[in-house]
Amino acid sequence: MSTMTNERADSPACATASLGNYRFHDLPDPSKWADCVHCGMCLESCPTYEQTGQEQHSPRGRVHLMKSVGEGKLELTPDLLDPIFTCLDCRACTTACPADVDVGGLIEQVRGQLRQAVPLTGWKAFVSDLFLKGVFPHPSRLDWLGRLLKWYQKSGLQTVARKTGLLKVMPDHLAEMEAILPEVGTPVRKKYRHQPLIKAKGETKRTVAILTGCVMDVMFSDINEATIRVLTRNGNDVVIVPNQTCCGALHVHAGDRETGRKLAKQNIEAFQDVDHVIVNAAGCGCMLKEYPELFRHDPEWHEKAEQFAAKVEDVSKFLHDTGFKPPKAELNVRLTYHDACHLAHGQGIRQEPRALIESIPGMEMVAMPNADRCCGSAGIYNITHPDMAQAVLESKMQHVPQEVELISMGNPGCMLQMALGVKKYGRSQKIVHTVQLLDWAYQKEEGKDVRI
Image (tube, rainbow, N blue to C red; front, side, top):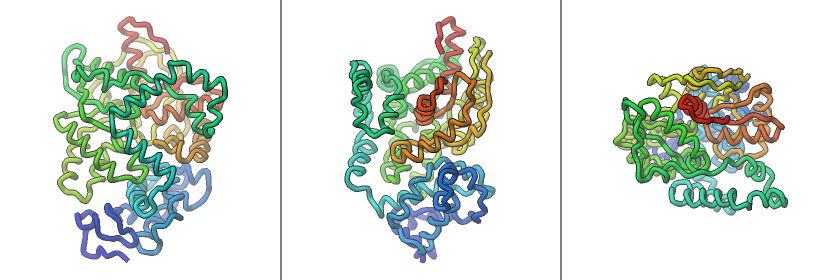
């Protein structure tokens, strides 16, 4: 049983003590499983339980397993890898739970313990170290990767690879992802390196900083550009803060909480002199707001993380709450909206993006049934668990209205996954970020030619 009889779960000593059979640094918080009464209200909300019908792949089943380790009834063995890492961490179970049990937070903490007990080996360890530690935290290496992808797309090699069948040597799920890669542009961080402050159009009401992101700035620099234009159009000076880095979400999801803390410290220090940190990626925003969770056992950094998290705002909520200017130009299209998990369930942001969309003249909103159901992206889940991700995506696409022209959302991972669904199931819809819709309407209002 636990050796923590005289220690609070959030005390510094608990960072290195033991809790049942959890014996590694950064112990899970037992209060997160204490309120679960295994009522089953979470079952219908869980995408993996929907697909498998297995208790170990349900939220309450996972809580039972994690709690059993904490009570010394189970060991941290490879047998736990499948139920714990097959979780999408979509947080829908917490929304459904009458006791607000933070299953997602607990999953991430236990993954940290499992990765210390059962480290990755061989090829998986190499790939994880290469990308999660060797590329994402380093802007210069991300730029190099972006240039390589851009050359692949522009040189004709992509066309050759697709026409000659070279992509068949890749696993099917990776070949499918290659087929929907967006066109790589110039990262905002690089474009504005000599102009770190972009002035508001008209009167300056406030100054904000944006998280440029890692994958976001390489694969979706056009959305970062649109975000800057929309923010400046609404009276905000926009700062491109140097020394910012990857948010660490992928690392924490993978159980590498130590790297997550290093990245968190770098971002906390980078943004310390700004009042607003605007984020256009739901997963990144949720991670930034949860930085305090990474420092439960470190009072000094926990306080800094709390102060930082209070500054973080999703772009849709920030615009809504600060009184954005509704566009005057019409966008005569039919659209449906997908709730990104880490926006709706992780941050509780649902109505604000819809309000932004509905403010655009001519926009016809068509409701999507189960709009807050996970699409199967979940960071890089569609790469690490392709079969489950595909099953979840298929279920999601069944709810996408046929008659719409656009599918809008607020997360890049969802955009890639939903684009895959559109292509795979013979749909014709275009995938767009919510902020792009406002940007197009503003540009059209200024007399620019906008093609949707």
